[in-house]
Image (cartoon, rainbow, N blue to C red; front, side):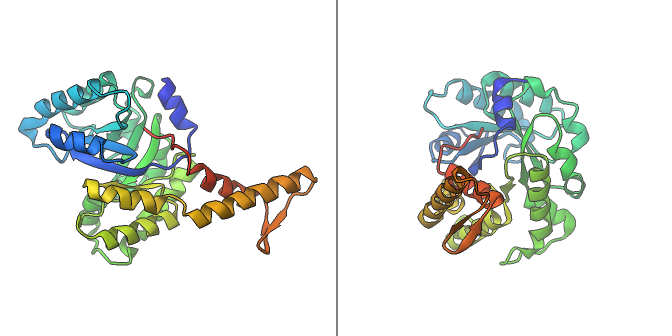
Length: 288
């Protein structure tokens, strides 16, 4: 296993924002990397027409190999593993130094055919009914670091009608959170909010996803990045309370006690561990 993959497997940190950009547009790719997203994703799949696949792959390779050391992290969404493009996409992403590989329409059987020791960490997109049904198996496939929920393809297949409250995706979201936690992956990444101009809707959707246990959200435009980053970061009040919980519990343990009290509420080990997670989210996240 390569060292990056080993680091990812032990990490539970959030992604924050994951910004997609078409692989055949160097200008947009450059903007994505500099947009402040936790992770930029060069897209070789849906954003690139079939005749342009090879040229896009070369463009992404040039961008990855020419990155400055201080540049933001960049992943590559390869074409579906069953397509004739996937092999060349994977080889390029690995040799050019991609920080992660994003696999669309993920299936457990296809993921298990990969040599995960030779690849960057994998973010698997669950976006089909079959993929959702077996997301627990996908989460345990070698090399998988996180799951990403793809709602557009899934919504078409399941004939879902978008709702302002997000209830049409509640089961899918909850299943990915549970399967990720059971497999000890990083928290999953939520769906793209397709209305680029709808800041309020994006904020509400991000806050809903965070409340359900997601660790980040996919973006399709740089203007979405700061909204998503703020939504998935702890507030000043949350951070201050978490620090007090950590301090009170650790002081109680020194006194030989297994519980503490903060603001009248009992603090035991699970509450302490959650507070540690919140404090840790203010640190530099360990992500692709």
